Image 1 (spheres, rainbow over the protein chains, first blue to last red):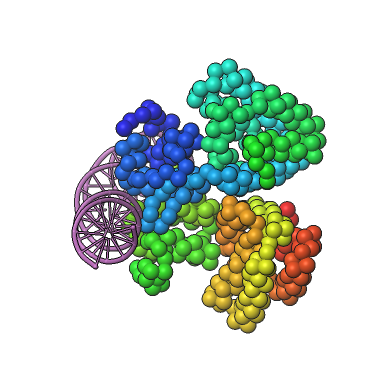
Image 2: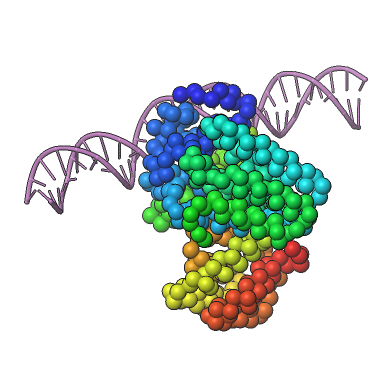
Length: 225
Length: 225
DNA sequence: TTTTCAAAAATGTTGGATATTTTTGCGCTT
DNA sequence: AAGCGCAAAAATATCCAACATTTTTGAAAA
């Protein structure tokens, strides 16, 4: 089944295309938590050969998006309260460490990336509030992601950035679910964003880390670490 | 080429067997940093079909042991001073966080695992000093790994433990190289080990974290974070 | 109702084949 | 001799089809 005309030029390989499509569908809960992922069934929806699909699922398993059980195939990673807590704990630690290091070492180019990301995010938040659909939700979430990446992009640790990315991806479906349910306080978010930008530019590490922490904890909803 | 009679009962799948064999050979620098990993060539050494080998390499890429470049295959991850610094930074942060959480939440079973791991390690260190060959090196390193895992095993965060594991694996070849070159101070290590065990059992978090940090920084050799 | 066991389904693996891309090497021009 | 371009060779990425093994299912027997 051919769906999005990602004409093989945009995405490098078939496996990468499959992976990003499935990743997206997991984020939007088209593929539900704990759902069994049978190879042949997936091939009918997404295309690709059995090997490409297996390889793709292996990649997603390494990213933590799906779980692989020997001789029993793959399933979408479960999404319990426990999982959310764990994922956000890791996001918090990665992003705190990354921001701390970036604020020590960041140059003008870094500041510029951060300011740009803050701006794009504020626009995306306005749009998703005005007309909340899948498309605006996606760009909103992507803007959040870009900001997170930007904040830690001067940490000078490729592995830390990769990890932060991974855990952000894992947290996506929880945030998008909260968005759908209208459980996101955009006013508080934009206040925090302004304060965070200010703290970052003033290189006030303590304040910035505290605000970042607030922001991530917010994603927890009711629970507590 | 059949090598180690891992009779298909010990390891679950072919891919997992291949992966652990290659992982080991990367750790022992049989496969050198930046070395090109051609599928057919690897198959002659390790067996497996072309697909199994690809899948295996994909897994190792996700673990950070090899690097995948689109349309250009796989190569062993490079091992520069930069890489070492980055890996140890991540190990340090993961293990510090894990130990801190474990010391808050750990029960008697956890303490028991830790004490057992310390004991096994002290024996392994004696052996590797007495007769330093590949076998004792492997058991020594594995004992170190078991201790690391044990220390953070009460942190109640599966993802943190998985990350710590991953970065330990990535740091392996550096440590084994240092061991081969005789650049490891076993006296200092055993002193630190004793002190660390004491601090852990006394639940003296500050002291324990400091000792753990010393231990990991030691792996850096000359460099500095 | 529970247990047992054979049939069906799904996974893991392999071989071979093909398209595409990258690398290599050789001859040509300057 | 150095640099360039293009064809040949190598390697990667993909697919199809098939088979072995394992898990799951479902129906008959206790």
